[in-house]
Every structure is written in structure tokens, then in C-alpha cells.
Amino acid sequence: MTGDAQPVQAEISDAERSRRIQRVTLVAMGTNFTLSVLQIIVGIWANAFSLVVDATHTFSDLLTDGLVLMASRKGADPADANHPYGHERYETVVSLFLGLVLVAVGCGFLWSAGDRIQSAQALPPLHVAALWMAGGTLVAKELLFRFTLAAGRRFKSRMLEANAWHARTDAASSLVVALGIAGGLAGYRFVEPLAAALVGFMIIRMGLMLAWQAIRELVDTAPSRELVGRIRATIDETPGVINGHELRTRRMAHRILCDAHIQVDPRITVSEGHYLSERVRRRILANHPEVQDVLVHVDAEDDLDHLALPMARMPDRDTLIKTASDILSSALPAPDRVLVHYLGGRAELECYYPFEVLAQLDDHDRLRAGIDAGIAARPEIRAIRVYGRAAP
Image (cartoon, rainbow, N blue to C red; front, side, top):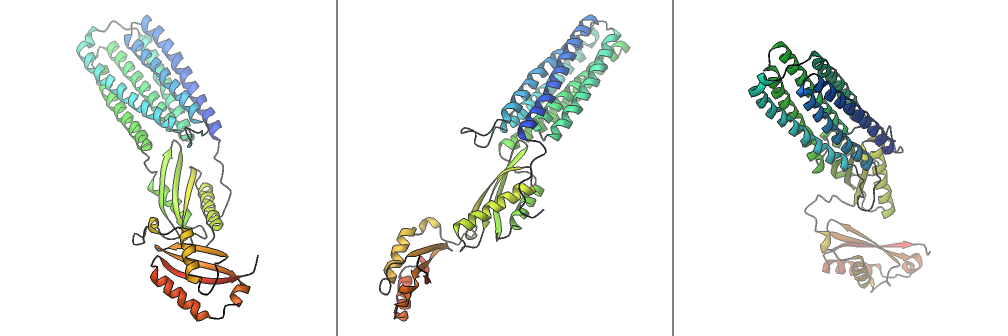
């Protein structure tokens, strides 16, 4: 799509996205609470202390689920004076926290594995009901993981994905408990600590990946080169744009913010330049729904040309108009209107007079000679042109 279509709406609004994330999180919280209570009851009755420990771990998930719920609500708040870009970064911060939690959980598994290797034979007698409880917990946690991960990808919420992988760690811990109980019932107590060590390494790796992704977002890492290239192509294909450059992008949770410079014809009006910048902005929003906002800067020339004199060294408009009036004063009065063009590190002035004034000019050679002499003495001015216009 290359036309100037209206910006397309996302499949769901930010408010609706937040509500759906909250519903998914409430399902996770209800599941974790139910499993925790059942694990404690069965664990105490069946002498399966590992189930009680796993229940304690599951209870800790209620805390992280609460953080996700809070962040999803806060992240949907509209922009305000203190947060002009919105509150989506709350999701990023929580994703980072959950990633670090995964690392801590993985390290805990490794530590527990060492302890269990030394004390595996001291475990109390187990009841087979503990194995059924561990297996049921494993299935429930795996289903919860898949449900939450699918929702996170559907709503493009890294925070929800992080929480899904946290649920996967619970499934892994339930697998460890199930293997440990099965090994205990069969007489092979070493199975549990070995499985715990393997799962611990997997959890640490996933936690580091999630934390690294959140850190990349917090330090404004650009999205994929493919997406940046498509945005750049949209800019360059906009009619009236000579070229686009200095395109910068960064993520804000599931959205992208970007700003860009566009080079246009240096002699168009300010209003047309604004029109072109707005046209570029609307085309980017229309063609790339993941982009939340675009800031477009209009350039009269390629500002990547380092050979041009810095604009800070150029005289201001009033000074240039006075200089032009002095140069023209030998043949003409002060002009009615002056257009100033700052190009290539120098200024070009277009001076407008009523046709009646120019009709009274009888010595064009003197005017031309005066302009040439004045420009020669002022290197900051490249040209002064005189135009006639109808009286207002």
C-alpha cells in the first residue's frame, strides 16, 4: 500500500489489549492458587515435602502475576505531563524483573540439586498419591504456559510472554518433583537432583534471554533491520520527498517510536513543507501498524553534507533584509516582501516590489551593478533577485 490512506487501527485498542492481558493474568493467578492449595494438602498427607516446596514456589508466582496485572493496567494509562510517551515501559520493567526471577529460580534449582544429592536417601516414605498430584500439576502448568504464551504473542506483550515462561519453570519444577517422587517410589533417589540441575540450566538460560531483551528495549535498541528498511522505503516513496535520512527507531513495549529527516525542494513554502511532513507521518502509520508515533523533520537540503557552513554562522532574517535594502537603495526603495533561502551555507534573497515601482526603474544596469558589488562584499549572500507582483 503506497497511497495516503488513513492510519489503520490495530486489531484491538490499547485499553482492550490491557483488559485482555489482565484476564489472562487472572486465569494464571486462579490456577496457581488452586494448585498451591492442592499441593500443600496432598504433600502433607502423602509425606511429599517436595510438593509442599513446589507449592511455596507456586505461591511466589502469585506475586509476579500481581506485578503483571499492575503493569498491564498502568501501561494502558494515557500519556500525561510526566510521561509524554505513555506508560508502556512499565511492561518492559516488569519483563526485566521476571527475567531476573527466572535466573534466581534456576540458580535455586542448581543449589537444591546439590543438597538433594547428599541427602537423597533421607527422604521419608512416599504415597503414590503424591506422584499423581505432581503429574496433574505438571499437565496444568504446561497448559497454562501454552495458554499464556499464545496470548502474549497475540497481544505482542513481552511481559506476558515472560510470565508464560515463568509458568514453564513451574512445569519444569513439577516435572522434577514427579521424577523425584517416581524415583523415590522405585528406589532411584538420584533421578531428582540430576533432573533439577538440567532444568536449572534451562531456566537460567531463558531468564537471561528475557532479561537481555528487556534491557535492549530500555536502552532504546532499534527494531529489526528489515522493519527499519521498510519504514525507510515508505519515506522515500512519498511524492515530494527528495530523500529520507537520519531515521531513528526505538521500541516502547509492543509499539515503535521513530523520527526521521526528509529533504524537500528548498523553495517550497513552509506550509507545503509541513504538508509533506504530515503526509510522510500518515503514510508510515498507515503502512506500519506497529509504529505508534513518528516525528518528521523537514530539511531544505541534505544536512548530511558536512561541507556546508554551519547555520549558526549565518546572519538572521532581519540582518539580511537590512543588507539587501542597503544594496538596492541606490535604485529602489525597501522591498515590500522578502523571501530568505538558507542553502549551502549561504543566503539567497528574493525581493518583491509592486509592478508600478519596477515600471519606474529607468536604469537596470545600475541596479544590476549595485547588486553585484554588494554581493561581492558580502560572501554570506549568494544572490539577490528582484521580482514584481501585483499590489495587494
